[in-house]
Length: 105
Length: 166
Image 1 (tube, chains in turn blue, green):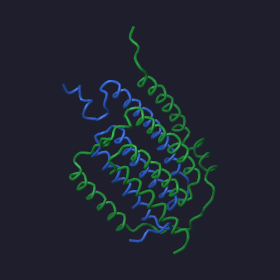
Image 2: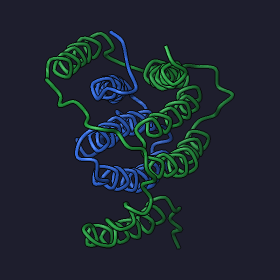
Image 3: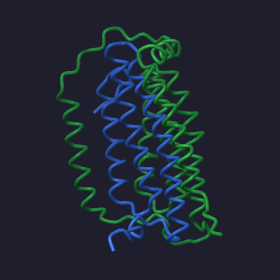
Image 4: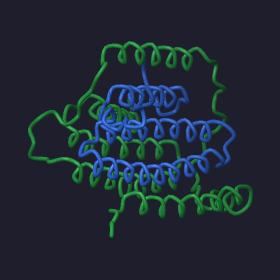
């Protein structure tokens, strides 16, 4: 299928592919940093949809404002998430997510 | 095929290709650097969508901030000289099946939905509009965002510092 920069559906397809790759990363990785990378991919795909609907839809900038909020929250998430990863590394000397399961015992 | 279509395809290939590197690479350093291509490509897609301010914010925060943070975390938690597989993946086959079904359903839905044709696409600068919205309609979320950022800042410092026991 042909992608065109002037059609809404091509942007939605790009967003869907990015989202699926992000979900795949989150599902398969055993490394906490990689899981966070997958979450960033998912947030980016959601942002593409916001901006695309804002561009092809009503024409006002509401979707772009939401996209900026998402970017802001992603920055906060990355800071706190990576701080937690570093704390886990200090405690367990590994960042495999399976290692941090002492709460189960 | 016009020039803009060619550039669009280039941007899409860079975005999806480096996202696949993030998902499938066996080395976490490659994954982290591939994230650069994805973020820059998404910024290019924003430019195609006429969202100049969001594209600039994407470059500043994602490429300049989050990516550097991720790279720092990778460097601080790995001995890079180790040649072993640093980015282990498990359960790839079931995940591939689930994700394949997911992407098929999503793309099929997008293609079968009769989207309204865009009226007339105007490319105007959006910064002033976004600023107006932030200080008018979205004032409360905007102020809340500053609180969230402050909390995240303090939280990150508290969580990642070393505890000094007397």
